[in-house]
Length: 464
Image (cartoon, rainbow, N blue to C red):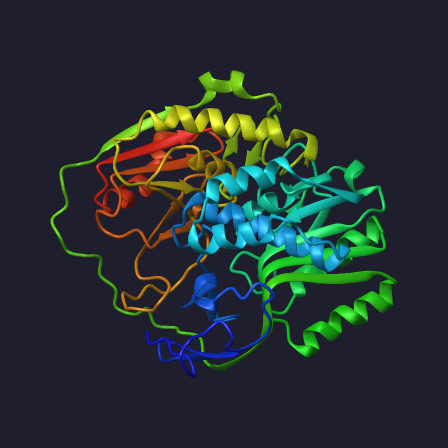
């Protein structure tokens, strides 16, 4: 792919052109960039295998498709929280400039994050933050971390036996459209604001779908939609205004970068030729299984004893973690308990490292806890996650997804998952995190693909 801008890149430039694999052209007109964050720091472009929407803004700070320092992703949520305070409440954070420098340049990043997390802002009204699965589960959690008088939960595609979701909605452009929210009724019965957190908004239809579903059962006066990127057109914004008038509500938007896009061309249909580096692989890597259940004494938040059934009808009776907020929700008062657990586990896992460059790999929706654990595992360590998103892989300079592998999801063999941008021999150690126990047979498709990366050690890590 050739990615070109209309002129030399600068922080003050407002218009950009991205040519994606000679098939799609995406014009970006920036209208709001309050912290002057360069676009090429925020994202790169790729072609997704999706006829509904053939392009993808691939975040460089989210920790999904591109590896990042774990604190980078956490700080992106903190900065989104700062922007939220400025735009919704008109309050500026004394730490704003420090967070921006830490995010952009890594300047005292760990110390800045610790300071921010200890100085959470007291929201004037009890507020519920909801992160969108799968990509924004960690972003939503990191944003929520900045506040007191708040709760957090994220949407999910999990099918649970014991309870029914409070909310169902469609993510229309996605490869997996059905989403659910298992939030407890108690968290919805108040009238405080709800903040919906996504990584990128193109049309905003997903947010409108969940607002309609929520408001029909638990009406309130205020909704806020927070995202790293917001590309809604005037027509899309008008849909928000129309819904506000129809329901008698307020919908406000908060983003680190906003503007409009124009797309010309057709989705890439034919898979481009892609070959992994044809170098001789080393001896079979050491594969280690780490069960964290013996360290359950570090937990003070109880697990959730729900069972799930996958697409093949297979039952999994392993409990879910109570620290993700997926089912019971998390309160701001529990934040320190999550911090303590992830810090302790990070120190335990740090002892298993070989001393070289390492990658921590979250799985699907299970992103935040692995990210926090990774942040406590030492230096020379990166984080990203597996994904459901099928993306064209092209090994060309300037293209966002230059390598990648597909595999059967360990939790559901009927679903294809992917990991991207792990180069040959890029890491000495790779840690793959799972929320729940997986049998060895189901792990093999993923493990076999990770072996091709040339890592010396592979660790499969199970929280429960």
